Length: 104
Image 1 (tube, rainbow, N blue to C red):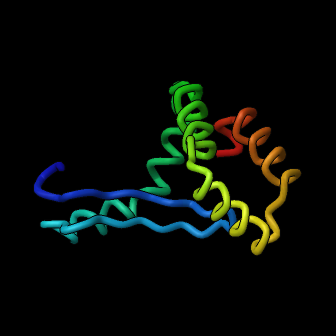
Image 2: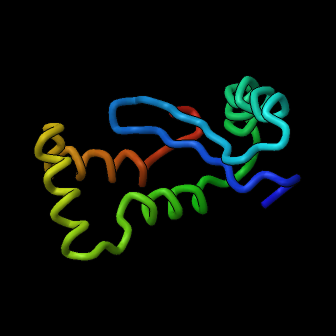
């Protein structure tokens, strides 16, 4: 909780969709300004000397969470219906592990 908001986040889907959100945001105008400036932040970050290793590790951790057998079944169903297979997962993992700031 920061400045009274209960939460905020960003999601980028396998299809390339991008969603930002805030929950019970006390200052939506401020959040909209942040959303508008996200691309400039990414450009600045990519041009900086900042290290990507921590981001790569957290991204892998997020894409491969511990899940229950029931969740495994739901994920497998979603992947099958969307056409996302093992080869896609391997390709995606390699892309994450070898990401460069230029690609970002």
